[in-house]
Length: 253
Image: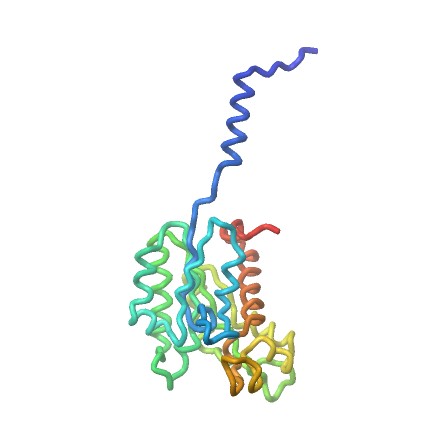
């Protein structure tokens, strides 16, 4: 039986291959977050109010930058009118992601941010089309559920975004876009915690409990740190479930 001979050239070639394999670095990308106060970065004076986009930044490796453009009180219409989307669309590059989550402020007719249903749909379609035009990846999300339990069924969360969440679902299906039904997932989360314990996820503070809110606070829309982390974990889980390429950039523990 002949003995296999490895030449110096073959050895050098193999070493070079292995070095190049391990030296391959992932192309840097940016994840843009556009949406409202449930996603946004909060000022220190608002603490412990926390948008889920804040803990979201810690999920990914060094190849990913999170650029959170979400802003309190904004709807799809005001986000566009205030020229908040246009700089994102201009900066986008191939391989980037845009997570789109509006609805809280679009759906309330008494708010200045109100967006009629047809315009809401059109705005979502615009975000998707302009993202794809740059060969970036849009991810559409329904708005996070409010903490409102059904008065007729114990332990059941009431629908507070029914119409506008359905529009998001429809737009996602029509455009075959990556989609996270955050409304339904957060409803389930609240039901798992229960009507009383789910207060632990939101801005429920007794008078004198925190210096930023000396008179206390009862807010069933905005998350505290725990709530924001729970919602961010839902988004992370769905990224994995959809098997987005982005999942390959999640920090490995």
